[in-house]
Image 1 (cartoon, rainbow, N blue to C red):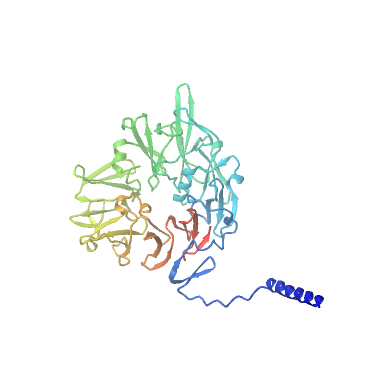
Image 2: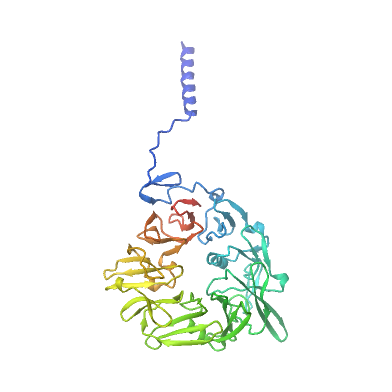
Length: 486
């Protein structure tokens, strides 16, 4: 009897064990509807996506570390990301595959942190590399491991395409103020010294390492007040093959002895311009996005003491006219947003209204950062403080009825569109409003909503970088709003 009971207990235990090892049939899933969106393997209704619900299903190695917020957008199918410890930059592809470690591929070199901002703004998609080591500042202090001189450039497949040291070049110029390297040209410099002093030469090469403008000390200019490098050059590329290169012969900030020159890259000619001209044209100032358009560059000053529109040719010749505009922005594509005769609109360099926004006004406040693509975002705040936005094209057509939003801060108080919480690229408007991220196309149609706050980059090659509100790291979304990498 005891033996029978023992056998029965063993049989029941074996049955339970085998049952636990057999996978259970999953209940049937309801079919997805056209209004649902998938995120991390889950269905999310009404186009509202909880980006923090799950980890990305397409991480392919990136899930081993978290993407740092200062990672780059995609360019040429590649992005630069830092993972976890903020000291391990990798190049990934659009599938989230880690292609190579920058530290391992280029031993003894690094990407300076300031170039992360540069690679975000350039369309070249290259890697800018500086040699690891110490650098001595103008005041004699030594920064350990902080050599910011760029000497090598690689493509995003990891191939070195430019090495300037064998060319007799000290480094590649950049601007700490505008944080940009031109996507068309590389501005380079050479510093040599002897008992007579320091000689600074400046030239231009292309991304194949070919000389466009040879090194020359004629009209060379430098930034003697540089934080890290003695006689550090500073350049602003103004478009249309024209660059402004800054010079200071003093160590003070009074403006005495400060001037610069325009370099016409295509002709290789230099044209010296005054410090006052630089101020009037807004170079490195609030209107630092001013660019040459149809051979001239325009700038506008408003105020009770100086209502003037300035025009500068590519040889540095200046002209100006008085105007009656106020509340003006910066020139872009030959027009400037302003208010004239009580009505808002876009005006040309002669102060003539070319696009009338008076129909939007009433008692509302209106602002625009101008035409940085074929269209311009226009922002509206009515008398009750409710915010709206819309798009206008260059012909003055409003592309959709103004959409209600909630500005992070007033656009007028910010120098850039992005600081206002708006990103407009790849035909998609991303903006933050009421604790979520919204996406609209150029017809005003809402594409998706993400329950997260923090746009790091707008769309580039079909991907945007978003900051997670839970852990403050970044992740990439596609144009459907799906979290796909990170």
